[in-house]
Length: 453
Ligand code: FES
Ligand SMILES: [Fe+2]
Image (cartoon, rainbow, N blue to C red):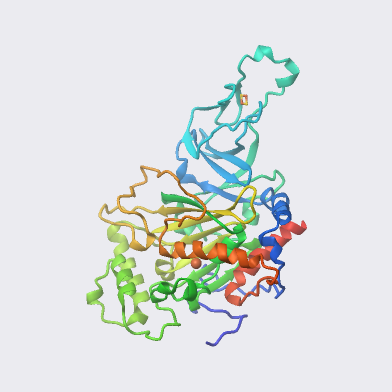
């Protein structure tokens, strides 16, 4: 294979330089080896809390989960609980989920809808705007205790492309300045027209960064997920690094891995992808190399019939996964039909556990006969109209995440990897340029830890 790290691998050499598809210039993050203690030390976990989690923009959820005034959802990060609430004027605001009286949690579930928040301990009441409405038996308080009218404590909140972000730092720069992704990048996928059709939170026995790392490259596919080689060009992945730790990889789908010897025959995996795109594989006369283009053309043709608007997307986006890293702990697998929003949330106390929190978002089409593509892994019988928001499924530590073979493979490997990382014999990762997103992520993390950000 002919490879030079400054050039990397390019999906579409004809992409105009100012397009979102074109390869961005190489970012040189050096070759330093990082201390592996970051993956298991409680000290490092504490530093992350002080310098990262309390200062960085984080994805709290999607707007479509709280469509109406009074709808709320809870985002949990370590020991904190953030309550995100839709307001009467349609905006979204966020508050600590805590009652100023004695510190009870104001809501105890994941999401719901209220006219006001009533605390379950002594029934103090707050408006959905966080304003104190009433104190039970107020005359029994000495005036000085409550005369400042304790409201719910507000947290910074901004929305972008249908996604809700929060920030615990009142001094943080606006999201716009820190998201790092180019203008229109997320917007073009119209996540605001998608809704959650599946939400699984499974607990894994590894550090949250071990999780991020594992999802930030396609280098491991041949070894851990060999069956993907029939439909994924793992070695042709394009890696791009953006400011502030953001990054993406474009993983070409509907093509065989260049590691596979037979590049001609159209076998089951590719036939499957053609069917999903509305093609009849029997009618296809080309070889495997032509399938990706043929699928793109078919999706483009079919789009109008079924009422799916692909006009903001380039051909490559119709087949490929634009797996996009939003610093620090999210990757969104973007597709025209839907998206996989994966959050790697640290465990509140144990640096060697994290929550793999993944929402499957689906974009319905006008045509009622249009079904979600099989590769999205949406269980049979799921409501796709967006009327029913499914309950979050919680999967305990040690159990398979119930998200299909590929995720089972990852969840089996990660605790083993975590264990090795802890060994005295391991001196820190040696990253290839296929793993440049990992170095980019850890480099940005260290800017927070050191106080440079
Ligand atoms: S703790 Fe909320 S009313 Fe007492
Ligand atoms: Fe994997």
